[in-house]
Length: 114
Length: 112
Image (tube, rainbow over all chains, first blue to last red; front, side):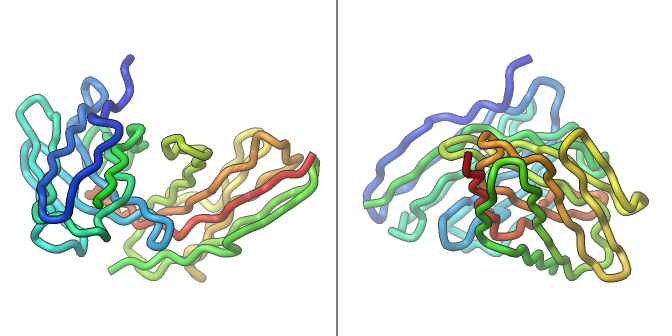
């Protein structure tokens, strides 16, 4: 069974640009969550999607957005990149919200903003 | 919203010793408490979890305890081995959501 797949693994972008990150959940998993990991702030929740609907959003500016497709794959987009957006972006998939089941993480996308 | 505090932030032990990591949470509605281990350059991986209807859970050398009244939970690792060296994160979430609120993590170093 394939795990959670995130692409690309590494990205270097310039301030002001935008970026789109992709996450393919484990087959059969319908819930996808995104997290930002930085040395200073640790793991911070960005958003949660289920059935193409955003169920929860963390305390991030509107430049951070996401979506989920009918096959449960998810993308997140960051517009007008800032240096402080440099981080490891992790997505996690689980069966469904409310089931309180294990969340499996992908390897992450390392974003560097220069 | 939920806030999870984790301490200590670093811990160094000798191989064979025990290690304890403590976390506190603020929202009494939280009912699921997973622990993740993250090795350098790798993804966080669940090592054990506990739900609010259980006070203690054990899996080989790892155990977790939960005190709902005091709103704290702890991870205990016995007979530590060098491969236990990693960053450990505690987290809390509420039923109905997959949103995990994480502690800041604890770097465990097990010296051979």
